[in-house]
Structure formats: structure tokens, C-alpha cells
Image (tube, rainbow, N blue to C red; front, top):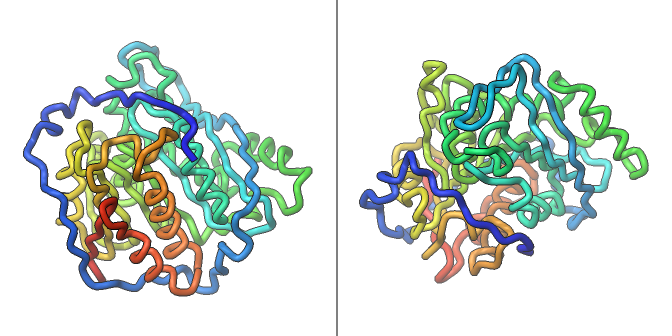
Length: 339
């Protein structure tokens, strides 16, 4: 599955955290819980694996500025170059927005995002204006995570047809004209929306789902992959409230040298259910998710896809299947807070 090599940019601002004493791997599995997909949601895996259309579009939000980066000038709007993966079928399919990490790239997770789309999910992966790997000094721009939950909501507005960049949506529809099926907005079920992210993108996910500054109530499930709570709400006066209003999957490598394992483990300890914590045994920060070969690849694809299917896909027995998939001897362990 993995095709692109990468070297992760370490986060200097949290170097002290990575050296802090972390929690050890916790392999215990608590009792199973039940989370139902929205009522009437059809199973999305009936025709899987789907052929996938991989499209690229620039979304422009003129209403919110891009502040000056450490090596880049300010800009009056926010441009989000976005990769969109569309299952080639009529749908309607759930929609997932994926947030990359600091100095990261949507091009480094093609294998993972393609797997989600093949399973029957429309996936949108924006490049954030100040923190993607094409921006000079991106690794020093971590504070712009405060604006990234708004970027995720803007992408949702666009793809759901409720606002955002309508011109970009028209362009996407034109690329789909030669395939069987309706325009993109009619291929998406607005009642089944998920958000996931890696590293700083995990912090973005915590923000847009659980921070009072920018909580988007359209989101029905969330995945945080080797992330942490960042002070998203500080500029807007918000606060994190992990109150269990949506199912949450947290996954973290126990040997993460960029974001210490305990940062997500601590979130899991305080979060209200339903929440699941998957430990990648011996796992590092980026390799398990990105397009480089690692021993966690197959497990990560299977576990994350099973979680989306259980929470958004409507497949019978989906949660029990996910909890079975989440335990791979010697590779992953699972903790559960049942509702």
C-alpha cells in the first residue's frame, strides 16, 4: 500500500513534552460498547471495493485571513488545496475530512485515504495554508492550528453544498461528468460525516469536534492518529470538552518520538465514553500512517476503516467487527470506555 517515503518534521515547540515520562503500553481491553450509525443508513461496503476517482481542487475562503508565517507574508484569504477521493458509484456515501500534520502533506497518506474511499467513503484532504510541507518555515507555524478547525468546516460547507467555495464544487462536478452517478453533493450523505487527523491534524480534529471555540455539530465520528490537544481555543476563548457526544477513536504509537504516547493516553483517560484507544505496539509517529512500509500498515488500514464503517457505515455488527479488528497480537492493543 505504501508508496512515498517521508521524513517527519519534529515539533520543536513540544520537544519537552516528548521527553516527558510517558505511559507504558496498556494492553487491557474493557467491555464492548454499542454505537449505532444514523438511522436508516445503508451499509457502505455492499459493493466494496469501489473504483476511486482521485481529484484535486483549490478551495478559497475569502472571509478568513492567513496570518503571516515565520517565513511567509500574511494573506487576506485562506487557500486550501484539497485532494478528494470519490468512490465511483451513486452513493450516497459518508464523508470524511482528513487533516494532515505539521510539515505534512496529503500526498504522504495516499494509501490510507484510498483504502477509505475504496470501502465506500468520500474523503477530502485539505492542505492547510501555513502548516503543509510546501510552506517555508512550516514547522514553526504550529500556532496556526487555531485556524484549522475553521478550515475543516469550510471544506464541509463546500462539499455538502451549504456554502464554502461553490465554484470549486462546480469544478469537481465537471470532473465527475463522465462517470456513472449524480453530482458530488448528491453522492454524499450529510448525516454521516467524520473527521480524522494525524499529529497536528489530530489536534485540529480535537478542536473541530470537541472545542467550544469551533465545534462543528455536523460531525458524527472522529479519529485522532498520534495527536494531542493543542491550545486551539486560546485565541477564541474556547475550551476542550470531550463529552462523548460523538464516538472517538484514538490511536498512538508507544515509541512516538515526536508526540509522546502519554499525550493521547491522557486524553483517553479524561474523555467521556464512547471512546476507544488503540496502542500501536512499538509504533512510531508517522510511518504507521504514511506511504512507507511498516509492520503496522495493514492493521492501521483495517482498524481505521472498520471504525468508520461501524460509526458511519451502517454495516450490521460493525462495532463488534471493529473491536475484533483492533486487537492484533504483537501489533496493536485496545482499551475501551463503554457508554
